[in-house]
Image (tube, rainbow, N blue to C red):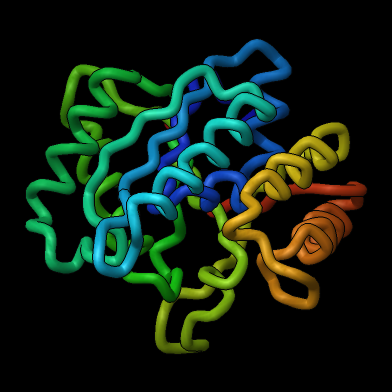
Length: 225
């Protein structure tokens, strides 16, 4: 596969997952005039989240998405950290509606082995929504990694993230890190993994594996040529 991903849809369980996992790729594709969409599946609801907290992170996401060049952000508004209590058919249906509206060529989704159950369920429902038994479906599906979710799984018990696609983000890593820093309510101080320094280090490691200065890594799930 080449770096032209066509119309791109990134599905994020929560605001900031998309920037942590593939913000550099989003910026690179947008910079090449690709149509990039981001869908945020969940919304924080009381009592776990106040309305003020929810509006703050949405404002942060809007600024970050504008900075990366996202064409449109889609808010699905299912309850955060409660997808396990949400009928699976509802999550399937919401993502099917989304895919029919956006008609992406490439779909980026969270990894099935992530420790957060919301991520696992979004992964499964994304594949349901993207089944190749409909007139139009994403020709390419990639799973991205999210720091503090993908690598905190149980080794040898849950699936491990073993990437086989690497996208060069040397030119857009600064923009990714700037977008991540815009999530003031979510970003942490180093050595926390959700820190700007940790994101830069991961990009360096993923890049060096392919003799690049910076990269984002993915697991290829489908590529119809």
